[in-house]
Amino acid sequence: MTIAYLLSAHFLDDTRDGVHTPPASADRAVARQAEAEADRDRALTEALSGSDETRARAALDAVVTAYFDRLARFVYGLVMSVDVAEDVVQDVLVRVWDARHAVRPEQSLRAYLFTAVRRRALDVLKHHTVEVRHASTLGLDTTVTLAVDDQLDSEAVAHTVRLAITQLSERRQTALRLRYEEGLPFALVAEVMGISEKAAKDLTARAVREIRASLGV
Image 1 (cartoon, rainbow, N blue to C red):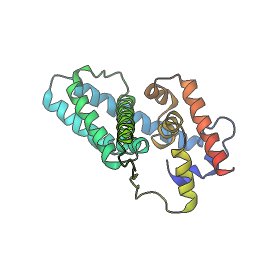
Image 2 (spheres, rainbow, N blue to C red; image 1 turned 30 degrees about the vertical axis):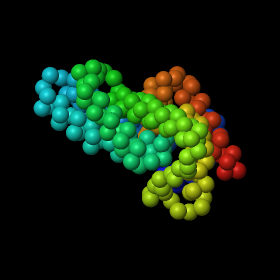
Image 3 (cartoon, rainbow, N blue to C red; image 1 turned 90 degrees about the horizontal axis):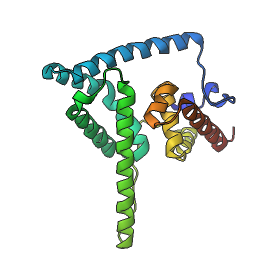
């Protein structure tokens, strides 16, 4: 999800339901890419869950190449720390390997991975909250310095948009980012979040309206 896109007419002028409908040509290109990724992911899950360990390890390497950066970027949006985000993704990928025989080839690999890292990130945040509360009772310094993403646009308006996104509830931010940053169809957004497709669309629409209100547009 780029700053340019968030500030584009497609994003800001979408007043009906907060969902951008791209031109037909762009829609077809996205559909082709999604289909190719789905075919690749089915092959990877079949290899991961199979009995050939050499083939399974090669599949895991391919999963890391295809998804590590995407998952880390997504988790960073939740935990606001590059190191923690990478630790979360690494932990999940280790668990995926350990439980590889339980991976179902018919299941969406994207949804499986994003669901796993979201759950792990929320667990980390919950644990961090407990630690901060405990430190407060002991009179310790609980000042937290958030990591800075060097890739963020330095312009003030871009900062305003990013800030508006971070002010969203976790559920609205997650729905928005899965849809626009990761390009997941609403059916997969719903699967990752454990909600209905309609609820996923509603969350995204509310997130868009909240950001519009923050920007005064």
